[in-house]
Every structure is written in structure tokens, then in C-alpha cells.
Image (cartoon, rainbow, N blue to C red; front, side):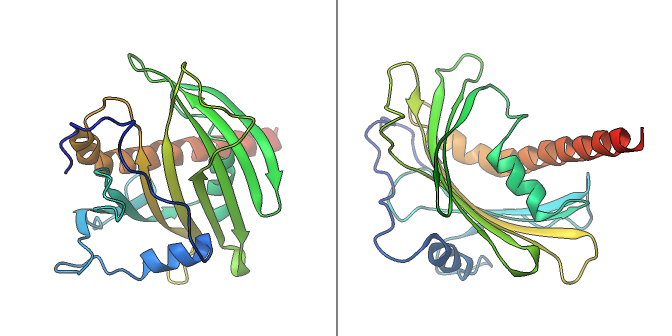
Length: 234
């Protein structure tokens, strides 16, 4: 874990992809084993639970990032009952229940996705903002691959009123071939919230925070589906 002593403004950030596609990068990470003694340094922080809880279960792993940034790279593998890949893509495109959300808008539509701006503010903290490029690939069998990566954009300059966060999320959603009505997900996340937040504490909180975020997302999606079903029946 990082000490958090270095300033968030001075920490090294991942370089843009020098070659290949977002899918190639996802496949590279996916091939890395996470079992004990693996050569990449993955550590299982939350192992697969024996049973589903709140209609999902999840394993979370962490390893150091190649860039040397002290924030950890996260891998999460999940299984979800009662949802489909499009549900999760819709949520990524419009996270309506995100705590502290102040602004969310389309900046530009691009051939394989969209560029979005988002601003959030947690209590007692300076606002953070994001400019994300979404790369979306709807694949065979209803599966969806999507990557969110921080980019620079002329319409979204960095301002003194918010800290510009670095964020990377690459995910694949597909229906399970072994369990009926179950959607499977694998995602890789790397983020640097910058500012003076202690990196060691953020790394420590990542595994439990990831599971809690998915629990809240499932509750939100289930409530939304129930409301839609009730309205259709009325």
C-alpha cells in the first residue's frame, strides 16, 4: 500500500494505450491468474462467498499498477440474479443514484460510444469531476463490453472548483452458460482521486467498497424493475 505522502497532483498516471484496443487491454488483464503465488502480484481480498446475498456474489482482487502509481488496480468478478447486461450498461451511462452527483451530461457522441462529463461532491470534501470516454461493444449472445477511461476534452477544461479525477473501468457483462437467469461480470478498475486523500486508506477500503457499491446498484435496479412492472400492470 502507498503511504499517501505524495501529492495527488504529482503522482504518475497511466499513459494512453500505445497500441491495440481497449478490448486487447482487457484480454491482457483477464489472462493474468489471481490464485496464490501468481506472478503478477494479485491478492484475493474478498473470496467468492458460498452463497448469493441480495441476489449477487462477488470476488475482489488487488495488485500494484504498472505505472508505479500507489493506487491499486482492482479486479472484480461478480454473478447477479435477475438482471441482464443492458441493465448495467444503462446504469453506467446514467448513474442516477450515485451519491453526491451534481452534474452529468453528454459532451460528444463518437462512433463506438460517447464522451461524458460528471461532477460529484462528497460531504466535507472538495468536488471531483470526470471526463470519460465510453468505448461500447455489444457482442454476440447479448454480451456487452464497455470501457470508461479519463480523457482530455476542449469542452471540459480543468477548473479550480473541482479536482479532476483519473478513472479507468473496463467491464464485460454476459449471461451465464451454467446458471439460468444469472449475469456474469468481470471488471478492472483503476482510479486516482488526487487531492490529499491518503492512498493507503483508499486501497484498504476498495474491496468492501466495491461490494457495497454493487449491492446498492442491485437494490436500485431491482426497485426500478419493480416500479416499471407495477406501472405496466396498472
